[in-house]
Length: 456
Ligand code: GLN
Image (cartoon, rainbow, N blue to C red; front, side):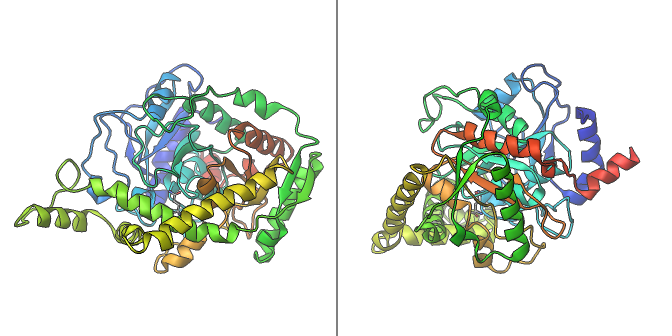
């Protein structure tokens, strides 16, 4: 059994190679409660009073928040051992954790590959057993895509299920915090603690959570699972075989598989990259060098000081997003871009209403393929954005989605993604849990961890 000491020793041994962590807690508390004995890592865009919180940006390199995110407070109350803060793409903008100002994170399954992003540090930390579970944030796939690349389970809850108080904002109508762990069971455990109403976040759903554990255990035979064959027809053979094998597991579990269609899914990526960048350009306006964050020296007036602070503090991808988003919101282009994208959001919501009138859950791959190599897509933003084709729709519609490990593809992890109607995280945990009772994909560990176990 992995305990806190094992986690910390894995961290000591492997983090010089993996670089999952940006900050280590000096002395992780050993608490009691629902998460007593569990080592939990936090994505470094979650504020913790007194801990550096950088969001992977030079802009916040020296920022120490004077308050703690609601989710972190709940972890502390539940007795979790908070072991540190994990690396991410700057302000959570990216799909590979190569956009961090503090160095890249590597995939513990193959150090020449990316762990995915933006919660790549959290996924790599769980995969390398440096912690039992981790929190990530997901604006367009940042929990699910790195979970898929690192062979673990990750859940993006319904928009509003988890308080965003203390999360550094990226796209406020899309952002959600969620659990990452090897098993669906641990995701349920973590979600139960962090989810639920919070007066400090006005977008938080004001109804109590169900017992996710109980929902997870309920029998799943007879449920209907939809999938859209047109979404997977162009997948590379290995990826398609993995996805189809996962569908077969669901058939064997007694689910009824039905073909359904999502006619507008192809528009989700362009709609996402308009809305996410528009919201980002607005959210990031607060980093002006005056109130907090990096301030450039030597400007001759306030305007120059602000623009220099932003030029020095933000990295290339963040600047690209601010420019794209500002353009999409500018007068004359607002209707052509931003407004169109918002209309697409409604159509996608309607597509899913039609799907969920026929089935209880919808299955699709998490990503087009397994983890790509470090550097492979970093010079081609469009190729990088395309790795989010299957994930952004859950954020645009607000729906919950989970990624769990399916059969390996070329020796690398590959994720199967499930979506459900709003507030039905329990259904997703249930399906993934029953899948995990029948298969051992979530029990495989990367070579680096096996090596530790052999040495130990
Ligand atoms: N990769 C997507 C982006 O770059 C999603 C990021 C996220 O979910 N935070 O915007």
